[in-house]
Amino acid sequence: MMPEPVEQEFDVVVIGAGAVGENVADRVAQGGLSVVLVEAELVGGECSYWACMPSKALLRPGTALHAAQTTPGAKEAVTRTLDAAAVLKRRDYFTSNWQDDSQVAWVKDSGIDLIRGHAWLTAPQGVQVAGLDGTSHRLRARHAVVLATGSMPNTPPIEGLEDVQVWGTREATSASEVPERLAVLGGGVAGTELAQAFARLGSAVTLVTRGRLLGKYPEEAASLVAAGLRADGVELRLHTETQRISTNDDGTLSLRLGDGTTVTADKVLVSTGRHPALEGLGLESIGVEPDDRGQLAITTDNSGLVQGVPGDGPWLYAVGDAAGKNLLTHQGKYEARATGDAIAARARGELNGAPEDWSRYSHTANQHAVPNVVFTDPELATVGRTLETARQDGFNASSVELPIQVAGSSLHSENYEGWAQLVIDEDRQVLLGATFAGPDVSELLHAATIAVVGQVPLNRLWHAVPSYPTISEVWLRLLEKYGL
Image 1 (cartoon, one colour):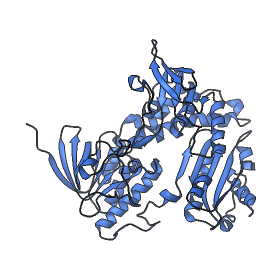
Image 2: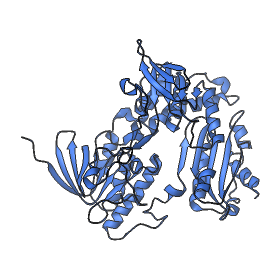
Image 3: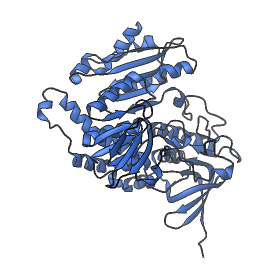
Image 4: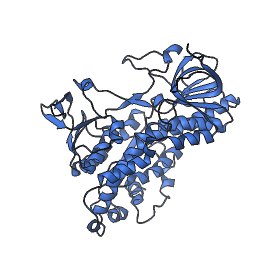
């Protein structure tokens, strides 16, 4: 006889205890509400164990070594190759060896309940949980249910893919050995970063993508990254389709490409994008139907509130990758903080309707100032709109761009190569976006983010004097080229 479900009531139920779910729960707890996190895997989520942290731990040693190798006086004192075992050990440290004890302790210390299990919606404000320990839970949320379930990798339509064992990004970032030959399918951020990381760890890497590398970024910036990968021995097969994948008798894998050639590899990493992880959450029970592609999709307002669901008043929210707007951890955490505050404010009767733009309850930056860094070597850092998207959005936009050639860059390393661009709203004379490519340019990005969010007039921005000699002097050169 099955035991009766444990019935519990909380002010807020958060499904998903990754970085985004943790931030929502923390904010509503600080707002005086009771909250429970439901998680079927590790508390801390994808970013902590299989994405942001391990991938950057794999990348950083190679970047540090290359920086030393391009600086006279240092290059004579360093070896030419990484210690792969030491790099993997350092990666293990940053993932806490895939143990979530410290994260669980933080949840407890923050006054947040935790249930380990799979959760799904059963009705407005109703959640069922199949506990990993066999216990069934029936939860009711007095004020809100928050979907913070992250995203899932896309599966490309490649013949034979379902019949072979390949890596996703999880398997790549948690790998215990470096393959002799690695094929990477996909030229987006994750595929590009991991291609370079494994090339520097000793793999012979071939990257195959249907378009150009990093196709969503300005081509001048992406071309510098492509040159960096080629310098590390990565073979780039751009504008090339993968038609078929198969296993050979010796256990290796063969890729048949659209140009008629074949690539043989010991491991194949499939990194062709992600989509919101909404399957299995019971959304159909509240009237959410799959779209034309068979995928569930939801729409949220600027506080994360899901639109068009039944119930008395606002109750269902989605944040982070689950909301499907900006699949970036830092942006998801930003959404989570605003959404958590909005839920608490609505519970106190202090917020009615949609919040005002740029208030603490609104995700306004999602439309105006999303920062993003590709942690390759050289790095690619961007915020806000590109020139193309600015014009598509109806702005009277112009751009100014130039190579990064300042005293700070020449001191940084020999033969420093970089590129910078500002996108300008000519009507208001403020920045709409910025892009930087080059070694260590990620540290330039927050200044650009502040300028875009703050809508700082260019004639005022001109008075923000960069320290000399730093790479930030490129700001002055860009403004001077614009005419200030």
